[in-house]
Amino acid sequence: MNAPNPTIELLMRHRSIRKYTDQSVERSTLEQIVSAGQMASSSSHVQAYSVVAVKDPERKRKLAELCGGQAYVEECPVFLVWCADLHRLKDAADKYTPELESHEGLTENFIIATVDAALAAQNAAVAAESLGLGIVYIGGIRNRIAEVSELLELPELVYPVFGMCLGYPDQTPVVRPRLPLEAVLHIDRFDKEKADSHLDAYDDTMVQYISERTHGARDTAWTRLMADKITALSRPHMREYLYNRGFKME
Image (cartoon, rainbow, N blue to C red; front, side):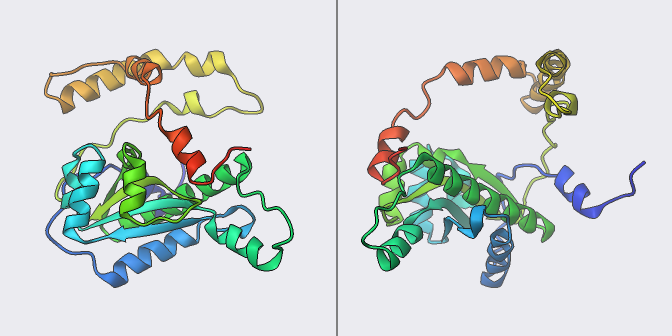
């Protein structure tokens, strides 16, 4: 049996927090959390991300509206908008090699920036939880992403990947069950048959979890939820938005 490990125990306790106390997040705490985020791995050390910390109540209210009316975006002490950011790379190319064509529009560079932002955000999330704070990621930032970009005055080649509510928890939700490890971990080759064989049991687990969470109002299987998700037309504006921001996907 593995010895207790406080870092792993912290990770295994993660849950999304949507209710926060009135306690403010001090500037020094915010900076400590974001600094920890910066220590995440980064492709070729490009560090292709930026984060906008929104504390202004009116700006948070507007962002909550743009995210689809998610009240906790307005109610959390700090709302972090994690952005993929290639503008620094373009500026560097303009400074040192203006005679050469830069390739900031390559799909690979878009992937690098998006992954960099996600890695930094997750590092920050773990740091926040280690300090007693809670977070919830907000993909709804992409619902009306052009308006979010305008509100936050984002330059070209910067786009919001997701938002993150940050504050001190005023709830203790149950940890949401994850897929069985056997459905995720493959050794030496991808074993689809083995992985898929664990989905029925996971459906049963999630039906029970959802039923308890909703007091019997819903009891939908996870695979059914995923079928609904993949057949829905989700944010079809994203391709045009990204192109207009300079992410040409070449």
